[in-house]
Image (cartoon, rainbow, N blue to C red; front, side, top):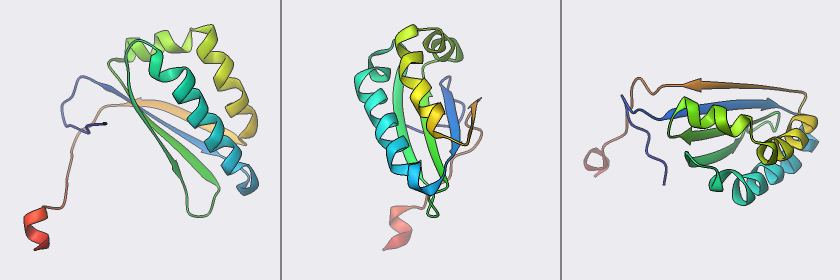
Length: 113
């Protein structure tokens, strides 16, 4: 289960894929398959969440890695790259970056009552 925590030592990957809406489902399927078959078995992987924009023009992969070094090691792994290439091919563009979590805000359950 992903934990979004301020001041965490984890590296957060946010990769925004721009896609033609008719390719969004195929990209999501590829990302899910790559995560289930490869990424979750790579040392340092913590979690991945796949999001689709309401207009279908963007797919976002929000993933957590133990460290930036673990993420970089995954990028140099041939098996990982093999699964990333078809994802890139489906996209018009993609924009991966590593982030730190600087603030976390949540609605209090007590306030909902």
